[in-house]
Length: 108
Image (cartoon, rainbow, N blue to C red; front, side, top):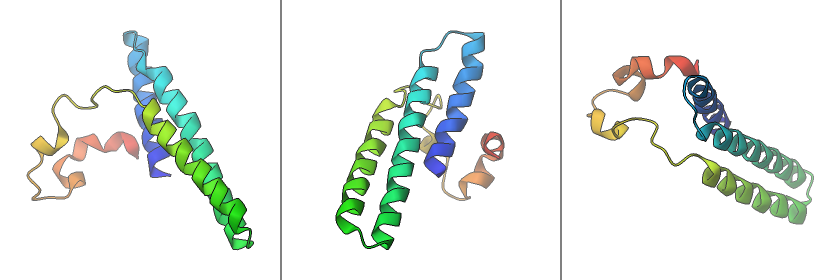
């Protein structure tokens, strides 16, 4: 679920940017979200099937869900989210939320 919420947040940000300047990444975020939601559904259904003792069906659904998740990741825009790698800005002395308090506000 966190992966899907992250895609939504970055997709919304991309959409807002595209209103100011034309960006191709908005469609990629949207495609990645659709595929991620399908993966999530398949994996949840696989868990239900496994609980019901339908192990072969559960295994197939889980495999399909993982493939959809891989496809979702491949759909993500190849651009960097930050100008410099985030790890280079963090010395590890604090948790990320404390080290970058202004970076997390748009997620909540």
